[in-house]
Image (cartoon, rainbow, N blue to C red; front, side, top):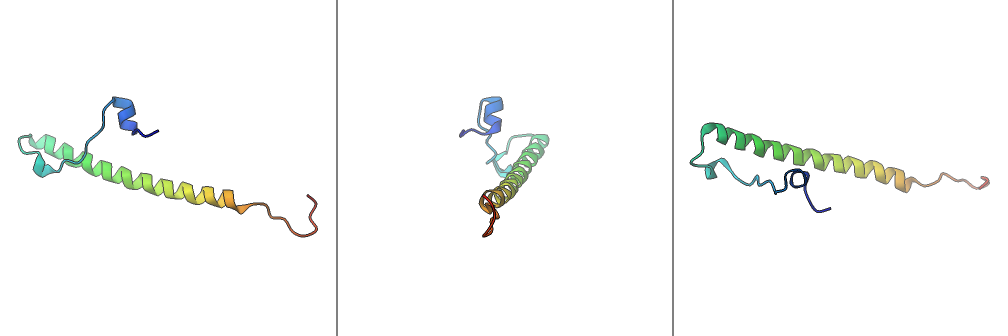
Length: 75
């Protein structure tokens, strides 16, 4: 698909590359919100990678297991 869920929902790309030092003329509330959003993005990224790893593991187990046939079994 090539688009993030945020862009699909809101129509623009979410930029979380700001660090608090770049936000100079913004209120303390906004600075705290930026920090919260950055931490949230990092945590969600880690969770998504973990979920993808688990899905890949279980899919591969199911896909590559194959049939358990022995000599003399009826096919």
